[in-house]
Structure formats: C-alpha cells, structure tokens
Image 1 (tube, one colour):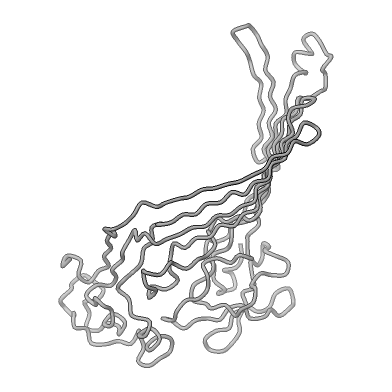
Image 2 (tube, one colour; image 1 turned 90 degrees about the vertical axis):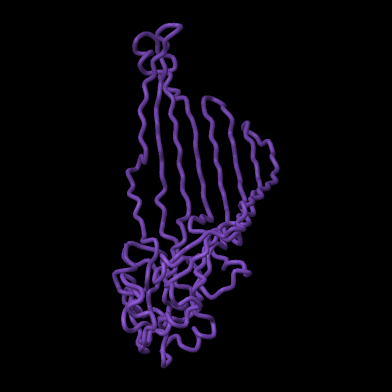
Length: 342
C-alpha cells in the first residue's frame, strides 16, 4: 500500500457474488378474423447482486453538514499539511492541504474505492401486445407494441451512504416507456398475368418494410443542483433550441436563464453550494429527447435460371426517409445558456 500513498486506490470486494437475474412472463393468445392472432403478455425481470462501486475514504455525514456549503471553516479551507515533503509527485505533498483531506478516515490517500460490491438491483416491467396477420393474398403484417418501465439501483447519490443500504433507485438510462414496431411483406400483384421475357422481369417482386418508433431515453439530471419541486419539462416538450426549463436560483440569490419565448419560467433548479448532499435523481423521467421514427424498405425478386441456380435481384434502403438522429448531451446543466441546446 505504501506505493500508492498520496494517490487514489481501488480494490475488489473479496466476497463478491455472481449477479442473479429472474425473468418471468405470462400471456394470452386469441385468434381473430382475417387469419390473425392477438397476443397480450406481461414480461418482467428482477436482477440482484449487481456490481456497485463506492469511495470509502470520505468525510462523514456530520462533517459534511458541519463544514460543507458556506460554513466557516469550510472543507475547502487550507490547513497545514502534515504530509508536506513526504509524498513527492502527489497532490498532497505541498505545505498546505484542505480541511477535507485531513478529515478523511485515511488522509494519506485521496480516495479508496471498493469495487464489485454485490448490492445493486434492477427492476423491469412491461406490457407487450403483438398482432400477427398471417399470409393471405400475398400479405402478412406483424405489429408489436411495448409499454415498459426499467429501474436501476446501481449507484449511490452520495458517498456517505452506507454499503448496507440498497443504492438509490432511479430510471435506467435506456428506459423507453413506449415502443412500436410494424413489419410486413407483400407480394406485388401487378403484372401477375404477364408472360414471356417482360413477365420474367416485372412479376414476382416482393416488398418488405420495417417501421419503428419509440419514446426517447430519459435525460440525465445535472449535478450541483437541487430541484425546486416543479417539473422541469417545457410545455411544448423538447425542441431544437431548448431542452428543458433552465431557470435557476443561484447561490447569490439571483435568477438565471428564466426567459423563454417571451415568457418568464418558474425556478426549476437551485444551485447548491459546494460540498453539500445531492438529492436530485439520476434521470428526468419527464424529459426525453425525441427519437426520429425509422423505416427500412427492401424489394427483391428471385429468378430460377436452372434447377441448381437461382438469381436474386434486391434493392434495400435503410433509414428510407433519410431522417437525421440528433443526440442530446448525455448529462446537462442549467448553466450556462448554451448547455441546454442541441
């Protein structure tokens, strides 16, 4: 350990466990007219013993509340460094260091992280509906819809939280509450009675298509801010100029970024002082950057040249509408003004 004095170290939990996943489902099917089948199912899963990491070399809750924010003395206050000159080429070798560093359980290290702690959990619940029209008159269609919710508890909001406690529950970063997919295959009926060379070229073509649309992933919540208690989503939803309500009450008592389209927005965030507990969840469930629907189309035709040989002509178009997919920043902040833009 002496090799890493003055640095951050990490180690793996020697009692780590293999994660467990339980999956379950129940569904009913019903045959409908037009040679179709409707299926409604519940599909869910529960995951336990997922890997979690936590920094153990931190100040206590009591110390954070006593010396955090704008208290005096503060965790950032400079103090005489007892390790001065003893830990060369490290960040705590100078004549002074912070009060926070001296209050750590192991002040000779800047961080001690335990990895693979088997306390994480995950929950997935979904309603799945499928309508399948079997082939009639050269046409078959499959429509699938999923309404789901995916929650994780794989990280702590604050390093002071005990490892005996389940991590804070929040939305998974890829949670998608609504998703629909439509696919089909059609034998094009034109030129069905055409013969000869023209018939070989024009009849017997098939058209395939896949259409997908879903709700966007939740936007990651910023660090360093508390919620004022209101929904930060804009009335018109996410757009290309502003992703969410960025009206913020600063630590100096003034408001910032509270004007949008000629109207004054209510305060959605309160800027935290440094070294104060975080309470804002990991993701905003009501702010989801839009996902552009996608359509893939193909046409193909097979021609038998010989009993042993077949030639296939195929034309495919992925993202048929040539629609761009804009990506929001993975994590945003109410400040400065440009941050909430695409």
